[in-house]
Image 1 (cartoon, helix red, strand yellow):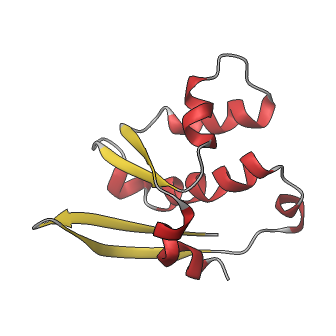
Image 2 (cartoon, rainbow, N blue to C red; image 1 turned 180 degrees about the vertical axis):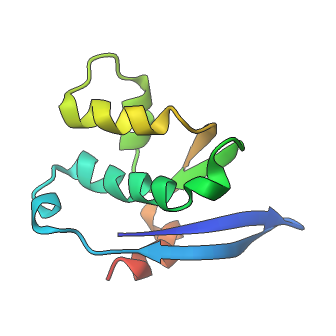
Length: 108
């Protein structure tokens, strides 16, 4: 799984940092939604010192995050993810997978 921290400068996204790691055996069995949300949570925790207290845009290639934020009835793992997400001030932007070639490279 991979994530990239970028900053918008002069109309361009400039990379500040890269982070990636492999799934452990248990996470390989996650359902698709949790498997796609795990890198988001990992990135938020990894860059916590840079993100906490500042508004930011979270760009994702998976619509599950947007659905999760609008769901009232959550199962255990989703509720745990939501507890992590509410600490941050962010808006979400969905982008198709082809646009995210830079983070997909980190996942291989």
